[in-house]
Amino acid sequence: MIEYEFSEHAYDMLRERNIQEAWVELALEDPEKKQPKDDGMLHYIRSIEQHGGRYLRVVVNPDARPQRIVTVFFDRRVRRPQ
Image (cartoon, rainbow, N blue to C red):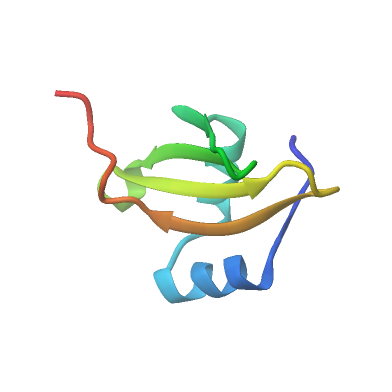
């Protein structure tokens, strides 16, 4: 299990977007994609079947201890493979 904490913004996004913490944990523990970005953030991407198969993107600051979840959102740009 990855040790992490939610930023205040990430908690706000969970509430506003009706995202379950269990889905965030699933994306962190078993991502379909992991993308390091130039700004140092790490993006975890996972489809959530309980949400119509849409892709959840979890943005993490891996340099913080514990790692900090910066934001979470369903990413419309990510599509299922055809």
